[in-house]
Length: 202
Image 1: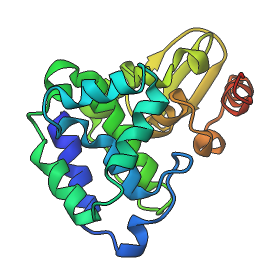
Image 2 (image 1 turned 30 degrees about the vertical axis):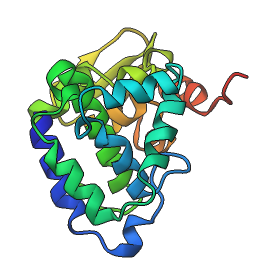
Image 3 (image 1 turned 135 degrees about the horizontal axis):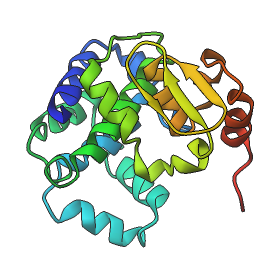
Image 4 (image 1 turned 180 degrees about the horizontal axis):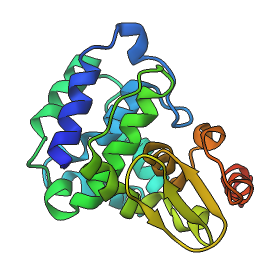
């Protein structure tokens, strides 16, 4: 499933214009090329990504920034070639496939949504990520005490006020993307909105 998701992302990125590669995404401060640079962790030598984590002192945001900075000098075509070389055999995919799948799917949508390029996500993949949202986004701070119900796939999870919407929108809400809030309905949406839009703690 990780390989399928990454192949679909690569095929989509091959269709982008030079201007679209420099366009905004749902990831604050990141252009499309920066999101792809972040996803290159499966294309690095086995010890290089852990080395980046050590340099960042195990801080996720610093690790991401270091990855993006490292690949700023590369062209989109070069980044995409490196990304494709790691599909199906990278260390993250082999050691933590659920994390890699959820991370790739969310960032795939981070790129597509601002470009207004929706897609139909394969149901099995979508259900897998709904059941195991990206852990480094700390999804429980958004989801605890709420019941999530997908309108298009057979997914229900949690207890409490209901949040109802398409599975893809629920995936994005679970990791704190405010862009999808207006696509959701139910008595739990107000609380979810307050959690997602709350200013970060200092």
